[in-house]
Length: 290
Image: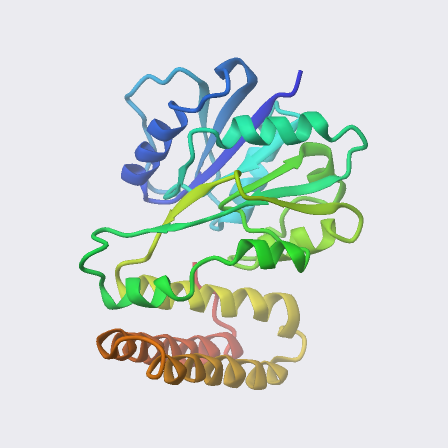
């Protein structure tokens, strides 16, 4: 019997976690085949869930900040042969686990390192997008191309537990890029498999501040993984990051409606200002953005 453990790290996001759990309660695979492990990564506030669900679930605590250390804690207690990772703000398709079950059932030769799929965005009001949602509309997750490059994201990820353990789990020192880091290692030996019917819906960010923080985390992850030993080599990386944002923005003035192109330009400017702030924070020895 194939048994799944769905691991969900959560940090001060109880409302959206509840929506995710309600979506999991509608999954079409029998609940006897899976469990949910929620990892509360908030050291100050306990997490409680007062609703009963059909599936088996538990809440555990991880006080060390970081979603990857939280996922590692979830892995330790997971009972499943297959681990599934999803973010607390996401909404899976109702056949998400069932379709994954079918692919692992056929994987007789144990070739799957990571099974991943589509991560379409959804918006608060599709008829009235915020500037940040406009930006996200044109920069959404390209998980299929990412899988071809040997990578996956933890918003939509299935792996054998022993494969994750073989590579030591996620790098707990990272606040970002941990999924890229681990999936890249796994792809050196196993396949990163993309399937269209493995679907997790992800909310577009609404506020520019949230998007700026995302990119600051990404830069922090890159710094920790690649530049910490030679911090000044981080300079061209950040300059290239800034130039790519502006190149992207300028191209949109010729390809999308003017109101959207201006929105993208403003958001790119905010992202780049955040990148400069994070650059100086990191080279001065500050902590990476959470």
